[in-house]
Length: 329
Image (cartoon, rainbow, N blue to C red; front, top):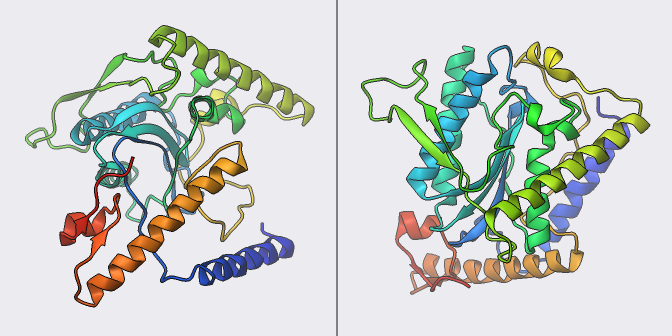
Protein backbone atom coordinates (compact mmCIF):
# COMPACT_ATOMS: atom_id res chain seq x y z
CA UNK A 1 0.00 0.00 0.00
CA UNK A 2 1.25 3.47 -0.87
CA UNK A 3 2.27 5.52 2.15
CA UNK A 4 1.82 9.27 2.58
CA UNK A 5 5.48 9.69 1.62
CA UNK A 6 4.87 7.84 -1.65
CA UNK A 7 1.84 10.00 -2.39
CA UNK A 8 3.74 13.21 -1.67
CA UNK A 9 6.61 12.09 -3.89
CA UNK A 10 4.12 11.40 -6.70
CA UNK A 11 2.57 14.85 -6.29
CA UNK A 12 6.02 16.46 -6.38
CA UNK A 13 6.92 14.62 -9.59
CA UNK A 14 3.66 15.71 -11.19
CA UNK A 15 4.34 19.36 -10.40
CA UNK A 16 7.93 19.05 -11.66
CA UNK A 17 6.73 17.51 -14.92
CA UNK A 18 4.20 20.30 -15.43
CA UNK A 19 6.79 23.00 -14.76
CA UNK A 20 9.24 21.36 -17.15
CA UNK A 21 6.63 21.27 -19.89
CA UNK A 22 5.61 24.89 -19.36
CA UNK A 23 9.23 26.03 -19.72
CA UNK A 24 9.74 24.54 -23.19
CA UNK A 25 8.53 27.60 -25.06
CA UNK A 26 6.32 25.82 -27.61
CA UNK A 27 2.96 24.08 -27.65
CA UNK A 28 2.98 20.60 -26.22
CA UNK A 29 3.82 17.89 -28.75
CA UNK A 30 2.52 14.42 -27.99
CA UNK A 31 3.92 12.92 -31.20
CA UNK A 32 7.28 11.21 -31.28
CA UNK A 33 9.53 10.54 -34.27
CA UNK A 34 9.44 7.10 -35.87
CA UNK A 35 12.57 6.49 -37.96
CA UNK A 36 13.32 3.58 -40.25
CA UNK A 37 16.10 1.33 -39.03
CA UNK A 38 15.88 2.21 -35.33
CA UNK A 39 16.23 -0.35 -32.54
CA UNK A 40 13.72 -0.43 -29.70
CA UNK A 41 12.95 -2.29 -26.52
CA UNK A 42 9.16 -2.53 -26.51
CA UNK A 43 7.73 -2.61 -22.99
CA UNK A 44 4.03 -3.06 -22.26
CA UNK A 45 2.34 -4.03 -19.02
CA UNK A 46 -1.10 -5.25 -18.04
CA UNK A 47 -3.79 -3.02 -16.63
CA UNK A 48 -3.65 -2.73 -12.85
CA UNK A 49 -0.47 -4.87 -12.94
CA UNK A 50 -2.66 -7.98 -13.20
CA UNK A 51 -1.08 -11.36 -13.97
CA UNK A 52 -3.05 -11.79 -17.18
CA UNK A 53 -0.22 -13.73 -18.85
CA UNK A 54 0.56 -16.03 -15.95
CA UNK A 55 1.73 -19.33 -17.51
CA UNK A 56 -0.63 -21.32 -15.29
CA UNK A 57 -1.04 -25.06 -15.65
CA UNK A 58 -0.82 -25.01 -19.48
CA UNK A 59 2.19 -22.84 -20.33
CA UNK A 60 2.82 -24.48 -23.71
CA UNK A 61 -0.55 -23.27 -25.00
CA UNK A 62 0.17 -19.70 -23.90
CA UNK A 63 3.69 -19.76 -25.34
CA UNK A 64 2.42 -21.04 -28.70
CA UNK A 65 -0.31 -18.39 -28.79
CA UNK A 66 2.08 -15.51 -28.10
CA UNK A 67 4.66 -16.90 -30.49
CA UNK A 68 2.02 -17.17 -33.22
CA UNK A 69 0.85 -13.57 -32.77
CA UNK A 70 4.40 -12.21 -32.56
CA UNK A 71 5.58 -14.15 -35.61
CA UNK A 72 2.57 -13.19 -37.73
CA UNK A 73 2.83 -9.47 -37.02
CA UNK A 74 6.63 -9.40 -37.29
CA UNK A 75 6.35 -10.90 -40.77
CA UNK A 76 3.48 -8.61 -41.72
CA UNK A 77 5.33 -5.41 -40.80
CA UNK A 78 8.91 -6.45 -41.49
CA UNK A 79 9.96 -6.23 -37.84
CA UNK A 80 13.18 -7.99 -36.84
CA UNK A 81 12.90 -9.63 -33.42
CA UNK A 82 16.13 -9.97 -31.40
CA UNK A 83 14.70 -11.13 -28.06
CA UNK A 84 11.31 -11.40 -26.40
CA UNK A 85 10.01 -12.54 -23.05
CA UNK A 86 6.46 -12.33 -21.75
CA UNK A 87 6.13 -12.13 -17.99
CA UNK A 88 2.87 -12.63 -16.11
CA UNK A 89 2.04 -8.91 -16.07
CA UNK A 90 4.19 -7.36 -18.83
CA UNK A 91 6.47 -8.13 -21.73
CA UNK A 92 9.80 -6.99 -23.14
CA UNK A 93 10.53 -7.38 -26.84
CA UNK A 94 13.73 -6.12 -28.48
CA UNK A 95 13.35 -5.29 -32.16
CA UNK A 96 14.74 -3.41 -35.14
CA UNK A 97 12.22 -1.52 -37.27
CA UNK A 98 13.64 -1.36 -40.83
CA UNK A 99 10.59 0.26 -42.46
CA UNK A 100 9.28 2.58 -39.70
CA UNK A 101 6.35 0.26 -38.98
CA UNK A 102 6.72 0.21 -35.20
CA UNK A 103 3.33 1.83 -34.57
CA UNK A 104 1.09 -0.53 -36.59
CA UNK A 105 3.16 -3.51 -35.44
CA UNK A 106 2.57 -2.71 -31.78
CA UNK A 107 -1.08 -1.82 -32.34
CA UNK A 108 -1.91 -5.06 -34.13
CA UNK A 109 0.18 -7.28 -31.85
CA UNK A 110 -1.23 -5.88 -28.63
CA UNK A 111 -4.76 -5.75 -30.01
CA UNK A 112 -4.99 -9.37 -31.11
CA UNK A 113 -3.19 -10.61 -28.00
CA UNK A 114 -5.60 -8.69 -25.77
CA UNK A 115 -8.74 -9.89 -27.55
CA UNK A 116 -7.61 -13.49 -27.60
CA UNK A 117 -6.48 -13.47 -23.99
CA UNK A 118 -9.80 -12.01 -22.86
CA UNK A 119 -11.62 -14.69 -24.82
CA UNK A 120 -9.55 -17.42 -23.21
CA UNK A 121 -9.99 -16.06 -19.68
CA UNK A 122 -13.66 -15.18 -20.08
CA UNK A 123 -13.18 -11.51 -19.24
CA UNK A 124 -14.21 -8.32 -21.05
CA UNK A 125 -12.12 -5.49 -19.62
CA UNK A 126 -8.93 -3.89 -20.93
CA UNK A 127 -5.79 -6.01 -20.94
CA UNK A 128 -3.13 -3.34 -21.36
CA UNK A 129 -2.34 -0.37 -19.17
CA UNK A 130 -3.09 3.04 -20.64
CA UNK A 131 0.36 4.38 -19.73
CA UNK A 132 2.41 6.21 -22.34
CA UNK A 133 4.54 4.02 -24.63
CA UNK A 134 7.89 2.99 -23.20
CA UNK A 135 9.99 2.00 -26.19
CA UNK A 136 13.56 2.80 -25.27
CA UNK A 137 16.58 2.90 -27.56
CA UNK A 138 20.24 2.27 -26.82
CA UNK A 139 23.17 4.08 -28.37
CA UNK A 140 26.04 1.59 -27.96
CA UNK A 141 26.70 -2.09 -28.69
CA UNK A 142 27.49 -2.97 -25.07
CA UNK A 143 24.28 -1.42 -23.79
CA UNK A 144 22.24 -3.03 -26.56
CA UNK A 145 23.64 -6.39 -25.49
CA UNK A 146 22.71 -5.71 -21.87
CA UNK A 147 19.21 -4.82 -23.03
CA UNK A 148 18.90 -8.37 -24.37
CA UNK A 149 20.27 -9.71 -21.10
CA UNK A 150 17.70 -7.69 -19.15
CA UNK A 151 14.89 -9.09 -21.28
CA UNK A 152 15.97 -12.71 -21.00
CA UNK A 153 16.74 -12.66 -17.26
CA UNK A 154 13.59 -10.84 -16.18
CA UNK A 155 11.96 -13.91 -14.55
CA UNK A 156 15.11 -14.46 -12.49
CA UNK A 157 15.26 -10.81 -11.45
CA UNK A 158 11.62 -11.04 -10.34
CA UNK A 159 12.42 -14.05 -8.14
CA UNK A 160 10.20 -16.43 -10.10
CA UNK A 161 12.66 -19.01 -11.44
CA UNK A 162 16.31 -19.64 -10.64
CA UNK A 163 17.49 -19.81 -14.25
CA UNK A 164 16.15 -17.97 -17.28
CA UNK A 165 15.82 -21.18 -19.29
CA UNK A 166 13.23 -22.45 -16.78
CA UNK A 167 10.67 -19.74 -17.53
CA UNK A 168 7.58 -21.65 -18.76
CA UNK A 169 5.99 -18.73 -20.62
CA UNK A 170 7.05 -17.36 -23.98
CA UNK A 171 10.75 -16.58 -24.17
CA UNK A 172 13.49 -16.62 -26.78
CA UNK A 173 16.13 -17.78 -24.30
CA UNK A 174 18.08 -20.58 -25.96
CA UNK A 175 17.26 -19.44 -29.49
CA UNK A 176 20.37 -18.95 -31.61
CA UNK A 177 20.53 -16.02 -33.99
CA UNK A 178 19.11 -17.15 -37.30
CA UNK A 179 17.12 -19.96 -35.68
CA UNK A 180 13.53 -20.33 -36.87
CA UNK A 181 10.69 -21.81 -34.85
CA UNK A 182 7.16 -22.54 -36.01
CA UNK A 183 3.89 -21.88 -34.17
CA UNK A 184 0.46 -23.31 -34.93
CA UNK A 185 -2.72 -21.27 -35.19
CA UNK A 186 -4.61 -21.42 -31.85
CA UNK A 187 -7.87 -23.14 -32.73
CA UNK A 188 -9.59 -21.78 -29.62
CA UNK A 189 -9.56 -18.23 -31.02
CA UNK A 190 -8.85 -18.00 -34.74
CA UNK A 191 -11.40 -19.30 -37.24
CA UNK A 192 -10.06 -22.20 -39.30
CA UNK A 193 -11.96 -20.79 -42.29
CA UNK A 194 -10.45 -17.34 -41.82
CA UNK A 195 -7.41 -15.77 -43.44
CA UNK A 196 -4.93 -16.49 -40.64
CA UNK A 197 -2.31 -19.07 -41.71
CA UNK A 198 -2.29 -22.49 -40.09
CA UNK A 199 1.37 -22.09 -39.18
CA UNK A 200 3.74 -19.13 -38.94
CA UNK A 201 7.47 -19.03 -38.33
CA UNK A 202 9.59 -16.59 -36.38
CA UNK A 203 13.30 -16.20 -37.04
CA UNK A 204 15.42 -14.67 -34.30
CA UNK A 205 17.42 -11.96 -36.06
CA UNK A 206 20.87 -11.00 -34.93
CA UNK A 207 20.93 -7.36 -33.73
CA UNK A 208 23.31 -5.05 -35.63
CA UNK A 209 25.93 -4.99 -32.87
CA UNK A 210 29.53 -6.21 -32.57
CA UNK A 211 30.07 -6.66 -36.33
CA UNK A 212 33.49 -8.24 -35.67
CA UNK A 213 31.76 -11.30 -34.14
CA UNK A 214 29.99 -14.01 -36.11
CA UNK A 215 26.55 -15.23 -35.05
CA UNK A 216 27.85 -18.06 -32.88
CA UNK A 217 30.38 -15.83 -31.12
CA UNK A 218 27.74 -13.18 -30.43
CA UNK A 219 25.36 -15.82 -29.09
CA UNK A 220 28.10 -17.15 -26.80
CA UNK A 221 28.81 -13.62 -25.58
CA UNK A 222 25.12 -13.09 -24.86
CA UNK A 223 24.76 -16.38 -22.97
CA UNK A 224 27.86 -15.60 -20.91
CA UNK A 225 26.38 -12.24 -19.94
CA UNK A 226 23.06 -13.92 -19.10
CA UNK A 227 24.85 -16.40 -16.84
CA UNK A 228 26.76 -13.64 -15.06
CA UNK A 229 23.56 -11.70 -14.48
CA UNK A 230 21.79 -14.79 -13.12
CA UNK A 231 24.61 -15.47 -10.64
CA UNK A 232 24.59 -11.83 -9.58
CA UNK A 233 20.85 -12.09 -8.85
CA UNK A 234 21.43 -15.33 -6.90
CA UNK A 235 23.94 -13.58 -4.65
CA UNK A 236 21.53 -10.71 -4.09
CA UNK A 237 18.70 -13.12 -3.23
CA UNK A 238 20.88 -14.90 -0.66
CA UNK A 239 21.89 -11.63 0.98
CA UNK A 240 18.25 -10.66 1.36
CA UNK A 241 17.19 -14.11 2.54
CA UNK A 242 14.78 -14.57 -0.36
CA UNK A 243 13.85 -17.70 -2.27
CA UNK A 244 12.67 -18.21 -5.82
CA UNK A 245 8.99 -18.95 -6.32
CA UNK A 246 9.62 -22.04 -8.46
CA UNK A 247 7.56 -23.77 -11.12
CA UNK A 248 5.03 -25.40 -8.78
CA UNK A 249 3.89 -22.15 -7.21
CA UNK A 250 4.10 -20.40 -10.56
CA UNK A 251 1.69 -22.96 -12.05
CA UNK A 252 -0.84 -22.04 -9.34
CA UNK A 253 -0.55 -18.30 -9.92
CA UNK A 254 -3.97 -16.92 -10.88
CA UNK A 255 -4.40 -14.37 -13.63
CA UNK A 256 -6.51 -12.20 -11.32
CA UNK A 257 -3.59 -11.63 -8.93
CA UNK A 258 -1.81 -8.27 -8.98
CA UNK A 259 1.75 -7.23 -8.23
CA UNK A 260 2.21 -6.28 -4.58
CA UNK A 261 5.17 -3.92 -4.86
CA UNK A 262 4.57 -0.17 -4.52
CA UNK A 263 4.78 1.65 -7.83
CA UNK A 264 5.91 5.23 -8.30
CA UNK A 265 3.33 7.37 -10.06
CA UNK A 266 3.59 10.35 -12.43
CA UNK A 267 7.00 9.29 -13.71
CA UNK A 268 8.05 10.16 -17.26
CA UNK A 269 8.19 7.16 -19.60
CA UNK A 270 11.79 7.07 -20.88
CA UNK A 271 12.52 7.14 -24.60
CA UNK A 272 16.28 6.67 -24.31
CA UNK A 273 18.43 4.63 -21.96
CA UNK A 274 22.18 4.64 -21.45
CA UNK A 275 24.69 4.24 -18.66
CA UNK A 276 26.06 7.67 -19.57
CA UNK A 277 23.79 10.58 -18.68
CA UNK A 278 25.58 12.63 -21.32
CA UNK A 279 24.37 10.31 -24.07
CA UNK A 280 20.82 10.48 -22.78
CA UNK A 281 20.98 14.28 -22.70
CA UNK A 282 22.16 14.36 -26.32
CA UNK A 283 19.24 12.19 -27.42
CA UNK A 284 16.76 14.24 -25.39
CA UNK A 285 18.12 17.44 -26.96
CA UNK A 286 17.50 15.92 -30.40
CA UNK A 287 13.95 15.08 -29.37
CA UNK A 288 13.35 18.62 -28.15
CA UNK A 289 14.59 20.06 -31.44
CA UNK A 290 12.31 17.67 -33.32
CA UNK A 291 9.37 18.78 -31.17
CA UNK A 292 10.14 22.45 -31.89
CA UNK A 293 10.16 21.79 -35.63
CA UNK A 294 6.97 19.74 -35.35
CA UNK A 295 5.20 22.44 -33.31
CA UNK A 296 6.24 25.14 -35.79
CA UNK A 297 5.02 23.08 -38.76
CA UNK A 298 1.75 22.33 -37.00
CA UNK A 299 1.19 26.04 -36.34
CA UNK A 300 1.69 26.78 -40.05
CA UNK A 301 -0.67 23.96 -41.02
CA UNK A 302 -3.40 25.22 -38.70
CA UNK A 303 -2.94 28.72 -40.12
CA UNK A 304 -3.56 27.38 -43.62
CA UNK A 305 0.02 27.94 -44.76
CA UNK A 306 2.42 25.47 -46.45
CA UNK A 307 4.16 23.33 -43.86
CA UNK A 308 6.86 20.68 -43.98
CA UNK A 309 7.02 18.44 -40.95
CA UNK A 310 10.32 17.01 -39.67
CA UNK A 311 11.53 13.57 -40.69
CA UNK A 312 10.02 10.87 -38.51
CA UNK A 313 6.51 12.37 -38.47
CA UNK A 314 4.21 9.37 -38.54
CA UNK A 315 0.51 9.97 -37.87
CA UNK A 316 0.01 13.16 -39.88
CA UNK A 317 2.00 11.72 -42.79
CA UNK A 318 -0.02 8.52 -42.85
CA UNK A 319 -3.51 9.83 -42.11
CA UNK A 320 -3.42 13.50 -43.15
CA UNK A 321 -0.95 13.38 -46.03
CA UNK A 322 1.24 16.24 -44.81
CA UNK A 323 4.62 16.96 -46.39
CA UNK A 324 7.53 15.48 -44.47
CA UNK A 325 11.23 16.21 -44.80
CA UNK A 326 13.64 13.48 -45.88
CA UNK A 327 14.51 10.61 -43.58
CA UNK A 328 16.78 11.62 -40.71
CA UNK A 329 20.12 9.79 -40.45
